[in-house]
Length: 290
Image 1 (spheres, helix red, strand yellow):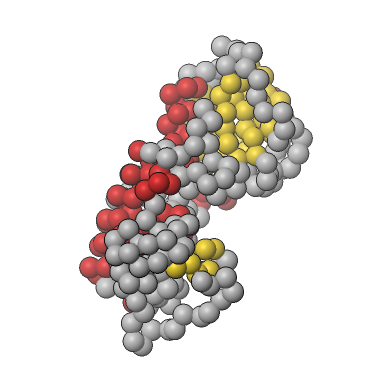
Image 2 (cartoon, rainbow, N blue to C red):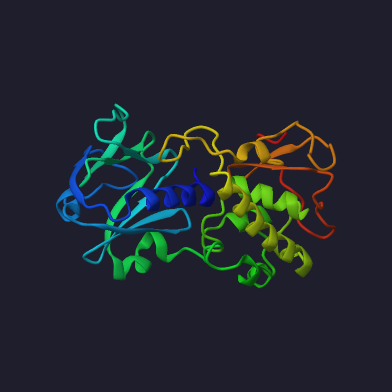
């Protein structure tokens, strides 16, 4: 699933490309995404100007005139494409095609159909069910000020799962949580409440650093993520642990391990990431552990 750096990359590109454009036509596939796309969407979008592009966590927000906001989530495989007049787009899995005043088309393609397209009043967006539960966004609120240590106090949830909880930090996902914990030298299996103040300071600092580096390289591509110009993200070559099971740690040379936490793959270095401490719950062995 595209995470904050990938979605921010798309936001910045769309901001440059379609800001100020007027929507002339809208065609829908009629297929259901994460939820059914309202049949009134074409009528309500026609004639609206795209004033700017915002982002909250992994959600894109198309701010339109007339007090409306189009909420979009890329889901597992969604992507936005901007096509020039006459340019041929993808033949399949296009669920919304928005014709702009200058002849270009803004298309939403989603093979797995876990994405989201929903129109809301701009004044009501923060109360939208999809966004209301989100925690602070680490590009808007410095992670050092989020009070992570206080929020994790006495928590027995594994620290990686804690970081991926969108109610805590909006936008941080599987790839970058693994990378942050490796850089901070923290074992992802440890209970979040077991980390001390110095460890949480390292984690908070690395969140900002890792996300900034990833955005500068247009995010990470493994399978489906591409920018609006069809380019893959370039951060994958800098990953220290994620998807590198069995390869040497870039810091100490120890083979990277892969385990499964909450149904998601976690990658870490057993030598340079601080291990479980005496008195804390032992790691449960799970299928898929390497």
